[in-house]
Image (cartoon, rainbow, N blue to C red; front, side):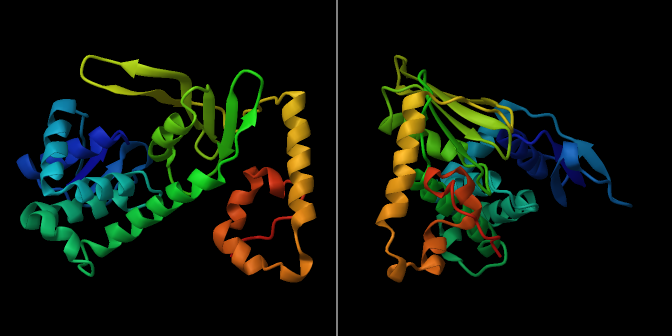
Amino acid sequence: MHYLYDGSFEGLLTCIYYNYYGEKASGIYRQDSYQPVLMIDSTEVITEPALAARVYQAIEKISGDALENVYHAFVSSAPDKEILILNYLRLGFRLGSKVDAYHSHPDVYPLHKVARKVTTEAHRFLGLLRFADTGNFLYAVLAPDHYILPLIADHFADRLAGERWIIHDRKRGLAVVYDGHDLETERSSRRRWYITDFPRDGQVPLNEKEQYYQKLWQQYFDTIAIESRCNPRLQARFVPYRYRHDLVEFKNHATPTEK
């Protein structure tokens, strides 16, 4: 049986619930991109938050690392991420917290590999992201391989707590928005950010002072470069070519095609 879901994390967890309390799933797919397979039945699974919460809590009981691995795999761009997560959890529910010690297991290694890529990219963008001043708010744009907005939002809400800012994922047409205030409740205090649709080609005008400082930064970047010590291969390891389109210091530089 193929389970089809709405693409949300809660939707995926609902499918995993029905895998155990309904018919066993041979695959889980996003409904909007599913291609029917001959001789295999499929069913649409309606997202049920209460059931998803039960699965979430069950994953937490495996370990905090298991929950992080599952979520990082979910926000990845891996085309088979749903079945990787399902296979990993089937083993995790059997082995408990020991599951992540089975590094080379065929149900563990593929998920670890995908989750690591997401973690690495999110960490990399904590240093690569460039904010520009529009006069009303700070604006940054990126085009990551994976959907990392939920993973980096808290970091910038803490670092730029008193600012209003937008981080725009132009590849996915989404943005995380922070209004510069905390959300206070009786039980907790957390940064008030949210993710919303944002045009892929949306243009945000910068104020004149920002444009001036960007030119200064580009001149500084070019001036301090020592030609005899230039190492493009090493530089590409730390700042991959595919990320440079959105970095101010590379705006005036031709970017080679990354292999």
